[in-house]
Length: 447
Image 1 (tube, rainbow, N blue to C red):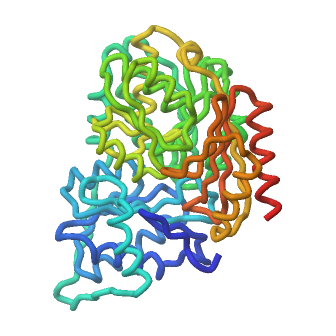
Image 2 (cartoon, rainbow, N blue to C red; image 1 turned 90 degrees about the vertical axis):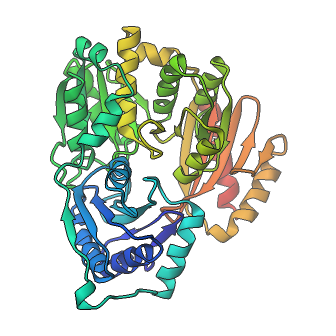
């Protein structure tokens, strides 16, 4: 990769190749040039390269005359909270989310404390490509303001969404694996505030991952067993920047990311009925929960900004994505793994039951995901090939390239963060979902 991958709301690349200090400065200053007056919050997800990029970014932003709030290590949803708390003009989180260690990136926040929309991100990309940087003279250089407390306000907002005393009385035994990333500080604070007996591993946010960073079943196979071995009631496995959450039950079974949103929906909708939103790649389980409570269910295009825009349009009470990202407007319009932790514990306390029994209330599907290398320019050709391969499917491209049957569905989606195309299939049994994935992969591999 010689050039970073630029998406709607950020940039991602391999450090030393497609992402250098110069790239970070150019992109950060391009973003600053689109903002109104006010400070800019800068945070990082704990990766070993994050501090280096933060120093470069702070220098560049000061050199264009901006005041910067340096919050150091903080989760992505916390960045949104800090932008609002400091009445900032915007925010930049230095993160590569679930990508491997060689990657890092910049994620951009608007003054509302949420990820940039496509409309707001386009001028940033243009400025970056055109190198429009307005350096200031020595007497107008900006300054860096330290942020000593990054977690308190976020913790307050989270605690306000649950019955704190009810959870404290249960004294839940919780296993939290922060994997040496930015979820560690707030994760410990939140679970301590909720009175949990906590076993916390990977608690030092130094970016030295103890296992592959994406919280998938394959990557967490060795860790899941520790939940049952320790007699914990639940295991929480956030991704490196804390905006996604995988759950493991008391028996050490991987509940996964896909059910995180459904578990939270099932709990919230008992008390507060209203529209819900999930993206087009999310399991039908969440749609079934909405149907059970008789509330409207809307699908958005893939991407956090798209989910949020749809939530705002329909005044949704909760939303998110099947990758474990729950969005609760009471906390902020950002995917938030800590929301998942708080709501799962509240559901366990309210029903006086286990995670496995909460999962037992949900409809069961099998979802399979594959990645293939495919030139993005070939996507129209790929869709036509799949239409020929699956002539009995209902095809809808209003919010994504999705093929639907009564008992299964298939989505083909180009990644915004990696040079790949994702194939996602869901069915009522594993054989059908795997077959659907295999057939789609074979059709696209022939192009």
